[in-house]
Image (cartoon, rainbow, N blue to C red; front, side, top):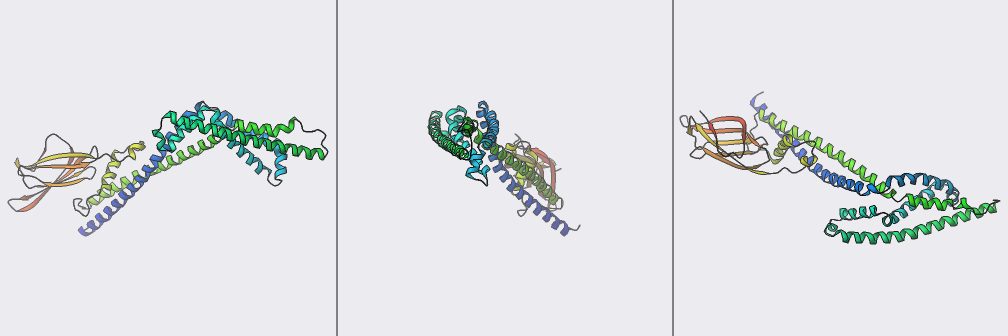
Length: 376
């Protein structure tokens, strides 16, 4: 390749590196949002399980299913009288009403649900975090009492309605030739609906629990994909930047000086622990750093020597040495950064032309004494 081709290739690689670094930053920001949501909902899920661990959630919810089936079996004639085309829709409506009534009653009957309500009040409104437990508990008790009264009224109304429908059905059957009057078996629709209410105390909680589990899983998956893509793009950005340098790109040129995107990508590429979500998506800490060099030539100080430094995380600085050959850099960077490249430029006094030298290595920041580099 000739010089122009190398320059063109270097520019192409640099532009790709910029694109990848910006894309990585964009995905990292989205991933950070995902992490906040996932972390909040995951903690919420753990609190729910802890609070409700002593409540008979599983037993009652499992019992609710056969009770509903039995209730439909013994009430199907009533539902058929209401809707001959879709009696199951009527049954489903009564099941939903039963679940609502159960939810109204459960706060009064189970302390775990009141504790759950206290947690949710704090979770959903941060202003409640400034209130005492006594204050929140008082609100929950008032809420539980109100819901219990509403639940009793609804339960009484629906049970009376089912009773009247059952009486109406028996009257029709007697008129059609039924021998036995209203008997014990005719109370079954009413009794089983009551059992639906009693076994359905935690059905609505279980539905919400499954929704929360799915929500946590979805955000966990989105978080993982964001991490994977961000890490991939960060690696590609640094690789393309290094390729651009190999083709002759001068990073100290103002037009190609790496932006913060590159620095963040380089840091993430080396320091981020992929398995640690919090560390991966936490904004890297910025530290104030210093490093000093004394530039000599065969033991003599080299004044007015232009010194360029590049760190592992792609921070660039440049300064000239003083009369003692000393140059000190003060700059901000990420933790564990090191200087890996030093480019020196001085004027040869005999030929009056610039002489360049490049030092590669690993120079720790914040050392107590200057690092001596002897040109000779």
